[in-house]
Length: 411
Image 1 (cartoon, one colour):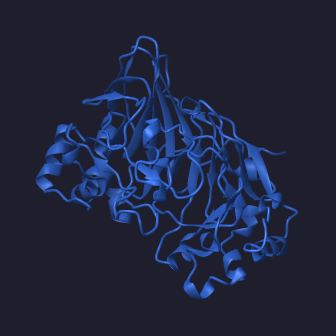
Image 2: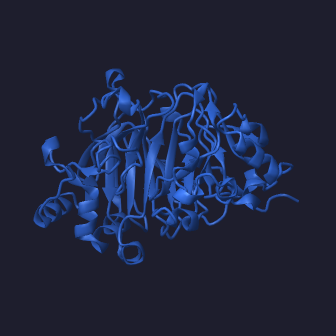
Image 3: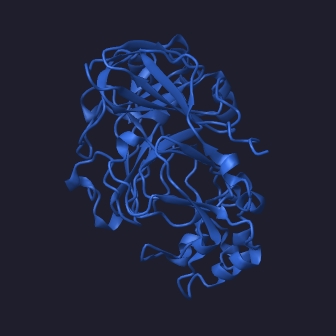
């Protein structure tokens, strides 16, 4: 059952944390594919919700939406909970906190424009590559009562002790491919292995870099664990029917199509932004190398790792051993500590090494806009190891780079 709490409890915990809320780990199963086992979850717990639900392959951060996980999923699956004490029983939904606090936590701009926190992030952790699929734009998603889904990728070295089976991602289609060629593959979805990625373009994943994927572009993510800031949506159409020997039913292709369009191949094709799919300069426009922030110094280094889009942004913050820094941001954010230990504001903080399903942790936080603007003081207590934090923002960080250094670079 989705929990609610009295507004006085929410405000009390918000004030005690000085505008920073600790969040509980939020693991999400998927009924398809195979887990990459890099989520720092105990080996016995990857099927903690039963084999019918599939293994746990994702961990969601700062989420106020539920996962689109079918009829067996509880209504709050994928939604983040605040952990106000050391008792799991005291948790309450981050969504309830944001509904109660409004602009006090997410800032006036986001509150007025969206009425809630508009994005979430996740760790995506699959051992094989994922199927070629497309996320719907706002127009197509609205026809099934949803919103569109752009997403960003960053590949953190700290969480990728192995590359999985195929550390290569497909994006779009080769510029020589025609829409009729794609139509022919989709028409055979229930007849044979269509091998639709034969029409796509593959890029080997480079750790410490990222990509931006707009709605309407087909993509088949490679098998590294991926940090994925994205818009508040979980909506797609699966264009690939056989991936790594696993067969996907026709319903995966059309589950987000109106009922009267489920056998209309031209409607399914209309979900594509064809121009972006065959962009001959795709890497130039959508690859995101890290950009070091100007305030970095001999105590800490901060980099933009997701940027240059209208929806979300992300940074990687590294505090060197034994250092204390106060880091300011112009917008609210969620964050996850992936290496090291110390303090994060008033909270004791540490990266998780091996969590049991349902266990609390000290690695995830949500920072209000006021606290972000004032600055969060972070101390790395290690003498040897860096403390590394991934931070995800909505669309309103005033310093987010609006352009990749590769865009417009060709002569």
